[in-house]
Every structure is written in structure tokens, then in C-alpha cells.
Image 1: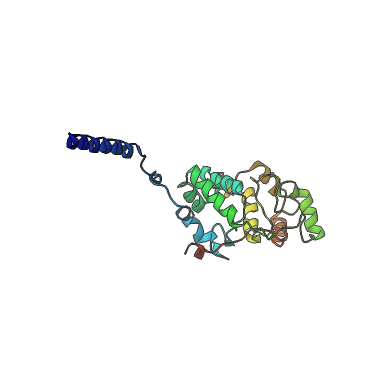
Image 2 (image 1 turned 90 degrees about the vertical axis):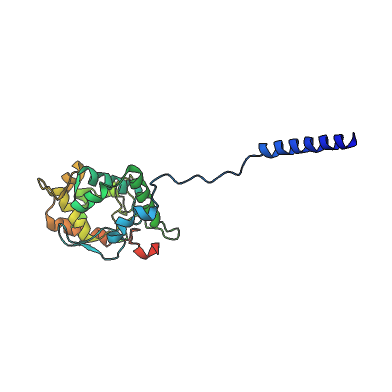
Length: 229
């Protein structure tokens, strides 16, 4: 009798213990990455070959330094990529790159480059740190540049407009001329506001405007490729 009771007791304990273990949830597993998901390094890999080399020059449609995009507004970078993808900005290389990007890719790349320019210790002046010559001052007033790009040309009234203070002068000159270009399959930019502004000026005047804005203090910069290594 005692042996029978002992055996029944052991079976009862085993049953309760097994049930308890069965009801204990298994440790949660980390979610698997989405199929085909790319790291930010992979997404910007096609960017650093030009925008990650200080002083790198493009040769189309003429020789000029590629723009500094680290520190640029994410909303503007995204808008520019969309414009290349749609053909509103004509540039064979940039079009081929933009065509490979999804909306998520564009947003991630834009956020990454905006973040590269953040410098908690740096603070730009509220107004341009250099006074323009009388000639350039008249051109700036005629173009009303500050009404969109801000008094210091680095704080646009809307983040979809670019920061331009300190940007390479030769790049800005090429960009401004592109707004004047029409009926060209490979070169040109379609933007009603900028087109109307740029067409008011001769190329010499656009070059003078570009040189002045490039001389100003800004927070745009180039971050070398070795950052990833």
C-alpha cells in the first residue's frame, strides 16, 4: 500500500512539473531582418565614390566639383533624388542611380547625409558673415535669394530648399545654368521658380552670385569614404 501511494505521488509531481514547464513561454527571438533589406552602408555605397571624396570633380556637362551633401537637408536630398528619377533634373549618371532607389532608400540616404553634418558645437551666424560687393548685392536683391535660402543662405525657409552657403562655386554655377537650359535631352533642370530666376541673369552674373555664396560660412561638408572602414 505504501509503495502504491509513493508511486502515485511521484506520478502526480511529475505531471504537475511537466505542465508547469510546458506553460512557461520560450524566450523571445530577435526578429529576422526583412528579406533583401540593405544596410545604410550598402545604400550609400554608390554615393561615396563621388560625394565622399574631397575635391572630387565631375566631367559632365563640364568639369566641376560634385556638391557637398553631408549636412544638407534630408527633405531637399530626397526631393533632388526624386527629380533625377522623374527626369526633372537631367543628368545621365544621377538618373541611373536614382532609378535603382526605392522611396525608403531615398529617405534613408537623405537622413544619413543630413545627420553627417550635425555639429552641436558649431553655430552659424544668423546673417551672411561676409558683405557682398555692390554688384553682387544688386544681383542678390534682384534674385531675392534670401527669401528662400535664408539670410545666412544656410537656413532655408523650408527644408525642401537647399542650404547653399559654402557650397562649391563651380557646382552652383553649373546648377544655375542648368535651370536656363532648354530642349536638351541630357542637361537641364525643370523648376518654374528657379528657371524664372536664373533666366534673368547672364552666365557671368550667375558666376558672380555663385562665388559669393560659396565664400560664406556654412555647415555643408564632404565626409571621406574611410568612415566606413
